[in-house]
Length: 130
Image: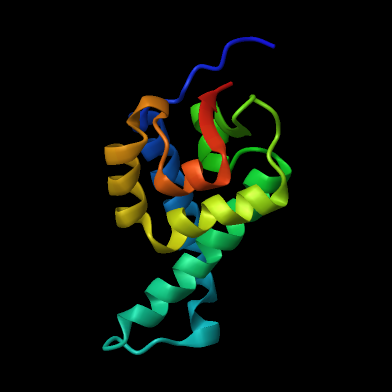
């Protein structure tokens, strides 16, 4: 097996932005179905986060990468470079969709050697270049 080359934080950030824009557009199309009053933006935020969680968990669990990661030529793998299963994908998507600030800060402080977020570490996953 070839050596794993870790994706940079910049590549991961751009993939995240692409994913957030795509899922945000879908959430915008769905908005009339759950109509959130202007004074209740947390409903939009919650719907978007649930959609992001499902999007990441499914695509990364079945294909190893979201559309943003595909554009950036990066993917999620296990610690040996193999495909991740749906369990690992669900687990690592929780941190990204619902606890991102904490997930990132603790990851940077504790697991910077492998450029892992906290939930990447806990799920035994890495983000690498294709």
